[in-house]
Image 1 (cartoon, rainbow, N blue to C red):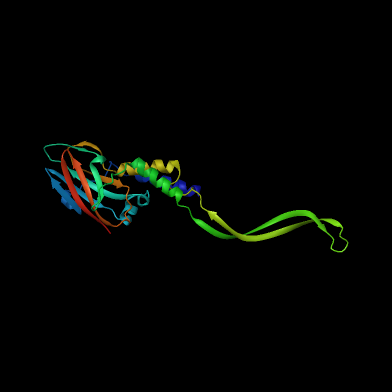
Image 2: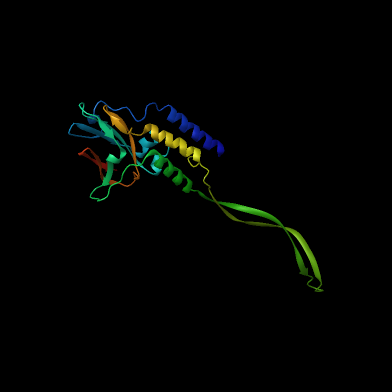
Length: 228
């Protein structure tokens, strides 16, 4: 099991190291993304990753906790844009409350926690051998006598898997955080187009109609999102 954990950590480390610049490469325009909108010179492109796509892109098992959305922002050529995760929200249709994206550190900790809680229960046959001694009585004379002997017993055992699988150790969490950070949307002031992933603490299996909201400096963009 330790070899599995080590291999997992090394694979994550290599993946993060080879990721290059933080985030993803923006496409030529927001219109190149499945979801896109423009308001007051700011363009937003987005793509919601399916579970299969997330498994191919990330070594970390983000499907345990999050819906992953690739975001691309294109600021007005005449001005810069201050990118912040807090500017984004995901709202279920007709819901009053919305979900904010989580940072890489929180996501890595959530994956670690869920990995530790997912335990396999196995049922297996068991046998045992023991030694016992005691006092018994002769059925004819009634005289006491000492008895010693070996006995066997059979039954069923239940094994509950511990939290030693891939993604559970503190080292694994740190490496997952590195990967998630490297692929995340860069925050801060930019005059150029930026792209990367953001992580919403909403499981993709929750089907329905959502809307992705982006609000910054009085500019609001809303994209309809359908989760199948």
